[in-house]
Image 1 (cartoon, protein in one colour):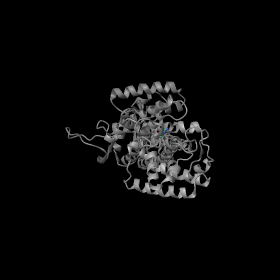
Image 2 (cartoon, rainbow, N blue to C red):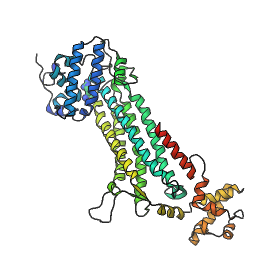
Image 3 (cartoon, protein in one colour):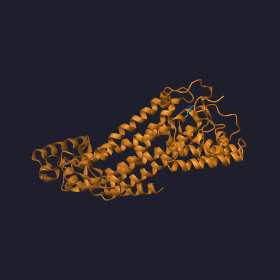
Image 4 (tube, rainbow, N blue to C red):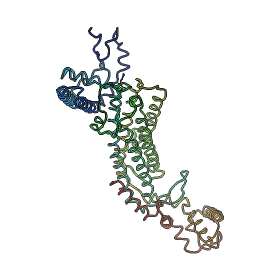
Length: 463
Ligand code: ARG
């Protein structure tokens, strides 16, 4: 009996065609065609294994390979015709394969289901995305490091509560982001281990009765191992959730940096200027130059966080094994990869194009009594208990504030009123340079330490 509709891959037992509305609702080809090349790779490996295990004939394998190469070329040339009637990327390719090579095309699906097929495709896609993203993270780290290298002696205020806290170098501040990105890369690399396992062979949910060789398919596709439970293999998307969590953290780090860039570029602060090509003007206020790129990065972070919540919510109510819900994993995942890729790429360029204004940074560092802690440490080192030192310095700061001067502008005689322990070596301690130089241990802001940190970061990147 002829099947009642075009999509006769599964419509044999149906009495009426699927409604147009439902077709549109359930079709995923509009977005999962993005998996096409991975679907073809998976099919090539599966077919090769089937032939090696004697499940299909060598001739079938040859035909399948020939057909898949033609399809590959059609897709690359933009000539492949995607049909919504054929639901998804898998059925579109299979149908075309059969049209091109006949029965061999129909044999390709032996011992396989779209359930293990799609799980494999998504893992291949994500593995490749992770590898690209790792390169981009390195690129961005290089941008930060290159800028930092020029500013190991550029002094700016370090903040807590956005109040001037202690002087730091601009390089030290930038290197904080290099550290964050190093952990981000580490996390992605770790996630990759769990992505890189093969679901194929799980078939619909329980495995297959054909004498397949899953290890062989894993080897052909570069997977580290096979997923050990067929139900788990077809149904869990934890690897995609984990990836999106990694992405959300990267975006969060870049969002924090963006917030700072925006603040630093405000004329009220004026620490930096972002190159014109990363900014836009205002249609009404001619004087404006807006830091649109960092603002959008900050905004798009919300979007990635949303994708993470979407994927978590998608999984949470699903019984084993595969459910169609999982088709909804793709758009959030694809958008996460695309958004993150674009963000990292543009960020690496933007950081390179930052003009630094060291005078403004220095002026700000001189304003908020940033070396008060140095004075307290000086007294404590001379034997005054730190709490008492803290109190003495607080009084000195109050005095300086009333006079409208910096601590370093107070005469020695006046300083001695706050503690007789103060000698004239205090002026070196109170200087911004002295303050930086004194924080001379690993992780500190002393220029020699930051120079060493930069060297370590560079050699880490070369590995
Ligand atoms: N398009 C589907 C997805 O993305 C492929 C798997 C469909 N399997 C099924 N039994 N309907 O999840």
